[in-house]
Image (cartoon, rainbow, N blue to C red; front, top):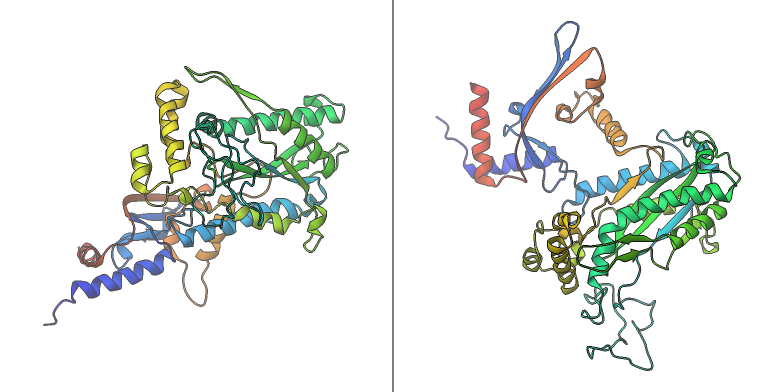
Length: 455
């Protein structure tokens, strides 16, 4: 009688099979259950997939995390999808008409205001060269003659933490999504006045479509990079009915951003008027690579690549986010957060406890340094969607190739079948964990799966 293979061998086989099915994901999701596609008219089973069919009795699904610090493979896939989404709204394709290239479109950068001098890079010059060598009221120098490298941990750190306005910093970061929302409203009103129309009449002639990406700066504040395009009233299928070009669109964007003020009143503190920083940049986007970028214009491929690279980053450079959630400043200190990030989180804790009910939700955003928005947002009619891109990839993977059948595991994900009247999709799945199993757990999983199949 043959003896059973050792657990180490079973574990190695299961691990290799799981890695193959997860397609490079470093922390896949483990599911148990089944998906069945049924003909609604006849009741016949068209296709059925169950985790019991797998070697270890587990279905492995990619985590889909956009952050490179969490999963390099899924992050790369997310970045590619984002590039297609961004470029489709500039050059057409993926459902967007090619005529969109004739619409006025501008690349916009909005920054945060200054809350105190910080260490930075000055294109080869010293950080903060001052001949008078001033000092702050706390006796710390307000100058720095050092030329910082890219990996210098002092980048973004305040020259004097006690002088730095951490309360204003956290308030601005928390209200940044509302500041953007009011900016888009103000922009529509100013565009209407620019062409001599009311806001309602302007909406019948044109609309602004955009996609927005946020980037965390070394000082812990976000910058907003956006592609803003002027369309017809129904979207990119029609040109705008007003006579504005990309330069005029950029000028109105600049005016709307510089004049916007958002007044907030935290409990127990003086009211604060929040605004965008002074460094506001608008650049027309021109069709085709190879243009003279030094002239100020940028092309679609350049913009899409530039924005997509920020989507896979978060707050890991501050010692956060990569290894665990941050529920308090104690967690941040344990994770190795930088002193500047720690002061930001401590200030957010104080505001969450004392500034009123609206700021209590700050406790859920310590890991993102108080930012509560999404890393990428877009208007509905800008271009395609992530769901459509992922559905196209899933449909491609389910097609039989080289004499093989479709990848049955794709049935775990949502597909178009559930929207068809003649097909009923029944899904019964249960989450059992995340990450790969070790050798002993894999061996036990394989044994349990074998017993389940035999029964």
